[in-house]
Length: 432
Image (spheres, rainbow, N blue to C red):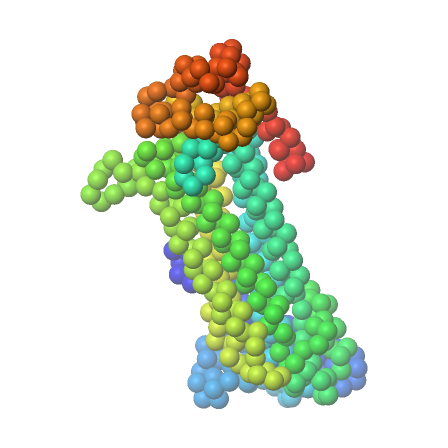
């Protein structure tokens, strides 16, 4: 985590103090349950809530000696609680605390990212309706294909991030479990009722069966979901980057007064935010494979996953949170050029209507092969002229075409509105 790509709300989840506070709550709630079961005195459980304190620096100092973070934490707590500290951590193992804490943190991080997606969806919906009927060229392989609208481009992104939201909700649910089951997960030294109590208190579900650690397929799914969401961010960022190219310039990132685009060339206005988002997406995806590899632990537990999660937990969530907020800002302020969109669409002499001519010829009785041949031989002349020739005029002069399609019918086939007649239908599907 570096400040440049971090937001305070998300980084706060991963600060040492926040982590130790969750550890303390887990231990204290467990003591409450143990006291209700009569395993420890109720006065001891009450004393832990009243007296327990911790100092991250002191914990680090102790850990340097004992080489165990949970023991260092418990030792520091004991320094404040006194004699009743002997009842803390009864029948528990370190993974009970570490795994339950990690899942609390991941759930809280998911809540922030779900809110981030909600904000992005709002921005996309607003801009999609703003440009619902703004014609632009659709491209396949980067080449002019057929007309669409800019609103449809944004509606597609809205639908994609709606799916992302559903995936994040599912990932949150997948990882929202608690394990307080003791060594190798058998509950031999702690009652399952303790786990149920802690789970409820921490806003989690009980882990049906743990092996001392919570199964890492849950976490693999969580981080894989972050990777998918990051890829969707990159897809939208890449669209903006292409649209901002000088030869295209149909839309561009907002360029603020006083902003500088290049240290050498004063004229530059570069898509720096969406380029940055592309890079951040790569980082998030790069953390997915280690999460997948964490699934295969030895027997009931090992800690090969631990070092991975200490890094990817904060880094993946902080990075994706930042990326989602930045993408929302890009969409909110995106500068759109409808006139340039229309100019670009018309720059290739009407080639974008070629399929409609093809279909009309087949309806007029020609085979598909002959129809394709007639349209293509005229279209290639327009292509080779760089759009200086007009497809409609060439088709009018082609006697084989005219034998099937008279001039008036040909002209009607070049109507732009034909391509956008179902925009309202698509918007109803997407936005309801």
